[in-house]
Length: 192
Length: 297
Image (cartoon, rainbow over all chains, first blue to last red; front, side, top):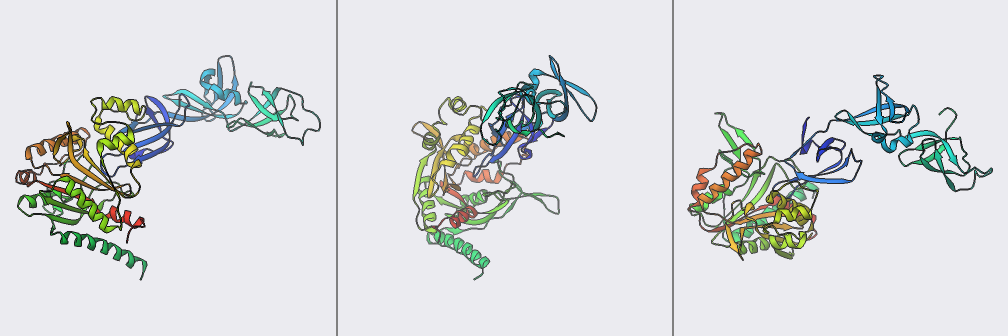
């Protein structure tokens, strides 16, 4: 794969660091008054998901590009071993193990458009859609007249995920969730 | 007076003050050529090139050092020069493709004497100048808790700063620590002198053994935290200098950098070069630093 020299590096680029694919978050040059310069990068490891990592190297060194591809796939259904997705453009069906799907599996509803990251054609991480609609599988009953008072209660969703919801929400209701901060946004509207 | 005229006059006065300083001390101002058919071997400096109508390759000088040392070897006595130099590097807050350098040489002066003169010059250009005097070894101990002269220096560095730099090269660690731990922590106002560098950064300076360790007789002067000047107790041994040049060419080759023929005339002059100390001072940087500081008159 390609080499990137220090002055070609930009945030968002996918490079190999310690032989693992990483996404650069920031690139900084550290130039002394004279002599060799250094490049300092902050990055996220795409396999472990660990962010806020840092590395420094000589400005004369180059980095290897990582063959990382982000694809949007539509989530279809899951079975015991895999989550199944479809590429709407190619109609190709893709199966990704529960392990590789990871936490995203808790926040996906059928037909959600998810982002799958592959490295050398192997899926290494799945990202749920920013918003999803899931029904409440279990929670304490909602008391009538509780639309005004504040307060919330935990609710278990159909996927097993747990979110805090307002007191008036009942079992069986469909709610909208922001998957990035795992928070209740509102009741799902009729056409959602 | 218009804004631009004011700025131009400030710059003019700045340069005039410098000239007066050296004229009062009896140094001769010299004007050496900017073009040469050879250039230095420094790994981190890229020269501008030009081709004449006969297809001969010329370089714009990156420093007047070689030309001035040739004059010194011929008996010029103490000399100074204010000239434009050219380096092919990305423009930054403190870097430019071309900039003005003040360079001067004092015959039979040791490094301490020259450092005093640098401080006197900067004090004349600002109203007051408090100064800090630190050996490299002390600076590294103070600010980074690391001794570059330690026989296990590389391993210690790898333990102190894990998951940062992946190298076993001592010079690279030294530079990394300088840029990340030393320079950011130098006093933000006043003059700081760092002196006695490790021998791998000797460049054109003499190497001496002091308190059992080998050091390059070299100093760098920082003003308000910015590197302004670089001085040497000059090496005047052509064989040793040639070895250093060859070493640099080796590194340039390994890094896929262009390699230039060595300036033989320069090497030859070293054997008749009197003992002297010399310093190069970045005038654009000093002017900028002074403009920003309220001490500047």
